[in-house]
Structures are given as C-alpha cells and as structure tokens.
Image: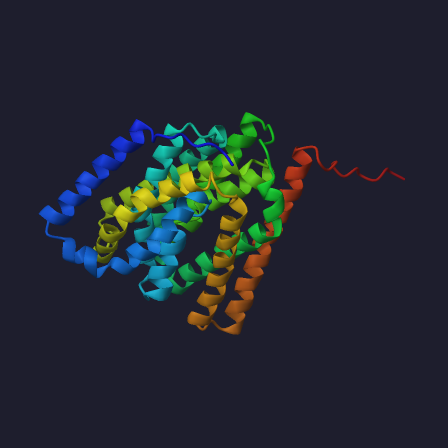
Length: 337
C-alpha cells in the first residue's frame, strides 16, 4: 500500500472551488437545472468513466463515447465532441491533482507529445475528421481499443511489475513524443475524442518499460491538454452541438471529482483489477460495435485484421523495449561464409 497525503493540495482545492462556483452559477442562475435532470444517464455513466480516466491510461471518453454513440445512438461527432468537453473538466482536474502532488512523469517524452498534439489535433479536426463516416469512426474506436485491451490482458502481469524506466536519449524522446502527439491527435483523437493518451502509455510501457506510476499520470496529463486543444478548436469553428453542452452540464460536476478520486483510490488498491476491467470493456465494446452495426463479413474481417496488426506493432515495440533495457540481447547477424 502506498501513502497518500492526508490533505489535498491547495491548487486542487482552489480549482474545485472555482469550477463548482461557476457550474452552480450556470445551472441555477441560468435556469438549467431541468437540463441536468434530463441528462442524468450520462452523468451516471461518467461516474465510472471518470474513475477510469484518473486511474488508467484511458480517457473518460472511453465510457462517454460508446455510451452516447452505441447505447444512445448519437452521431459519432457528438461522442467525440462530448469526450473533448467532459475531459476538459475531468482529466484537467485529475492533472491538476497529479501535478500538485508532484507525481513522477516522463516529462521529456510527454512534453514533446504535447507539442505534437498541439499541431496534430487541430489539423485532424479540420482536414481528416470531416471526411470520416460515422460508422468508420465507430470502427476505428472499436479496433484501437480492442487492440489495447488484448495487449493489456496479455501483458498485464509483467506491466504491473515494471519499476522505473529505461534511460533513453533526448532525440529518442523527442521523436517518439512528437510522433505520438501528432499522429495520435490527427488520426485517432480527431475522430473519437480520445486515444492519444493510450498511445503514449503504450510507448512508455512497451518501449521504455516505464513504471505504471509514471506512464499512467503522463498519459492523463497529455489527454487533458489534448482535450483542451480539441474543445478550443471546435469552439472556434462553431462546431459543437447543443446536445454536447447539455450532456456536459450534467456530467461535468461528476467528473470534476471522479477523475481525481481515481488518482487517489488507485494508490490503495492494486492496478491489476482496474486494468483487467478496462481490458474486458475494451474487448467487449469491439464485439458490441460489430453486432450493433451489423457489419458485413468483409468489414468484420478487416476489423479483426486491424486488431491483429496493432498487436503485431505492440509486440515489435515490446521486443525492442526489452533490448533497449538490456534484458534480451540484440540478434547477432550470421557470419559471412
């Protein structure tokens, strides 16, 4: 069991006070309480989603996106925009607590990931996301998260025992971080509202074998920042539906405290059960999506091949990471005849 400060840090308390004051003013002085009552189901769903947002490398949108898109049959754009909006409260709240508690982060790689996301996320929202059909967005979400679920399930025991992280060069961290932020933001987060955090986590635990106590907080900080970038971009474009704000109004007060609770609670319980639950959810939503969308056999085959392709990449990263750490020797080329 790891120790946690008995008192919450003042920056976090000030943030919560400011947020709840603003929320109460909007709801009660703006006569929006009926809106909150009408959208209580998403608030209930995000009670669980916000815990995962603070305690795992999966953003709160991991629950918000499938609930809105698959369960409530909303367009994928609403799921994405809601993910940005709700994570701009929940994951920002968790990040403020993480930073105030001085939790260890992979600062160099995470910093470059922030730079990459600053460029990639708006670019994806403007250039790529508008041309992705709704069904394709659902399948991208399903494939990427199922791939992560399989990897987590297979490597769970080993990942849970990692300590510290492999020392890498500044160039390695810069290139890895930029690639994660740019491509994750442009190709995945721009259509689902989540995902760049998962990519950073995968690179940290597989390539540099980072302790989960380093990898997960780093991924939370990246997703919080990327959500702010995505929300700001969509707001400037005037591209946020009224339904997104209605759902946000109901869920925001839940995630503001739920995600930080995940940060705290995970210090008292083993990470394995939480990650195992996330793994099962990720694989389960893949099955749910394929059944719910009644995808053709060719599409299903392509989706399964996508999961296998992602996990092949994960295995290559895992093998490379063991060599970087000096666990496995590099292959010796055969001697010339």
